[in-house]
Image (tube, rainbow, N blue to C red; front, side, top):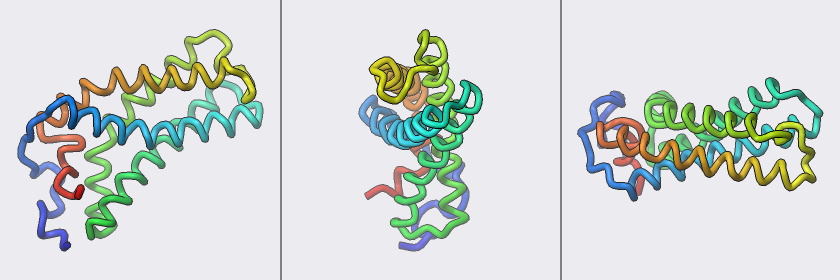
Length: 162
């Protein structure tokens, strides 16, 4: 499928689409998957290395963005898009969602007493991390619904999903 089959290289050229809660939940779950992979990997690496809060959070956030974008890029490459167009679409589709999710889940981790200092074998660490991702999903869901309704966010890549 060629890039011209869809909307060209302009991520903003997408019409508004019906923003149902199901569509928003699917987009948010997609975002959560990439964020969770990066977040968990970052927190595990940082905790194993004994890093303090700030470097732990920075690593987790960077990896969440990397994995979040990578999941979107994978689907866009499968749809036949070239690197530049796929990257522009991934940035347009995922940036705000990942950003909100990362602010919320890291904020929750920081405010749970002892969670950032708990070891990898601690129920507190894994429970707090799971809870933080759940809260991030719940906060990001209505934001994604609103964004999709405006023809932005995951609405810009919907035409490429099959």
